[in-house]
Length: 111
Image 1 (cartoon, one colour):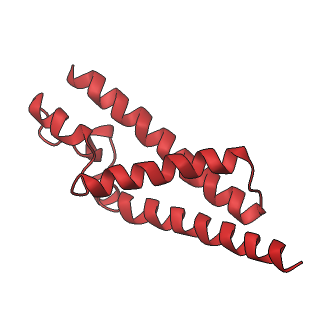
Image 2 (cartoon, one colour; image 1 turned 90 degrees about the vertical axis):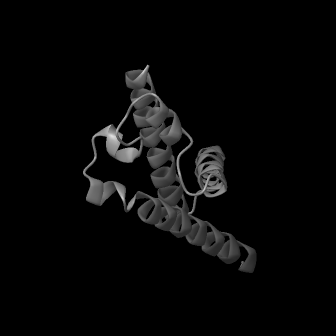
């Protein structure tokens, strides 16, 4: 069961990280289509879940209950110095995407 939790955690991490990058890239390109909206929805939903859960992924306590020494993102085979910075980097990418989208939206309204 612990391996399943780790696999789900890894897949969720990859999907959410990809969505954040897509949202930021679409913002920099000035594209506001469905892809950008879907990526933003994933990114903001993850941020809300993470913040409302005391800044811990909901899978972390579950993995620890099943016997993991640590249920954190380090369980998806990232070095701890990288995993400690994931919220900061992910939040930064989300903010970059948001700023880029707002800037593009404001420029389009000025025309």
